[in-house]
Length: 96
Image 1 (tube, rainbow, N blue to C red):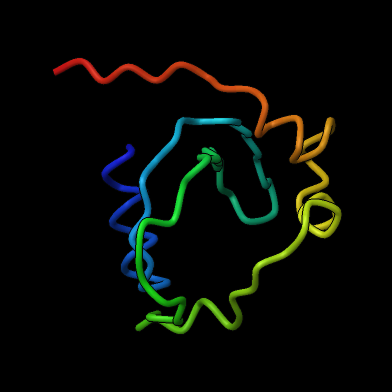
Image 2 (image 1 turned 90 degrees about the horizontal axis):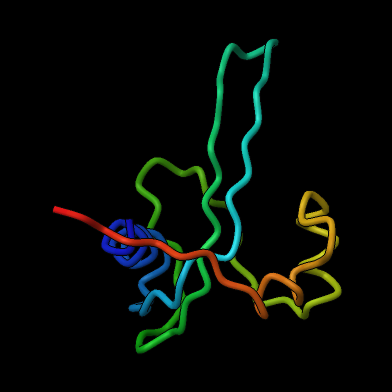
């Protein structure tokens, strides 16, 4: 999963990141759309690059850096706030 994170961030934003662990797993079902979605939130560190939208499918309209207060507004499903997530970690072990 960490390799997927690094690849997707690079593909969509031009940034090279290093994963620093999983901080949340959220699950949602939409009866209207007929989908069941699992959201995995990683903490990551930008290693290099300049941010740019590289979205061939045109799903991304804007990228912005925001402070913690704005991040909490964008992600209200993290009930204790984004800052609490950054203090926590969920173990992830890949077994081949």
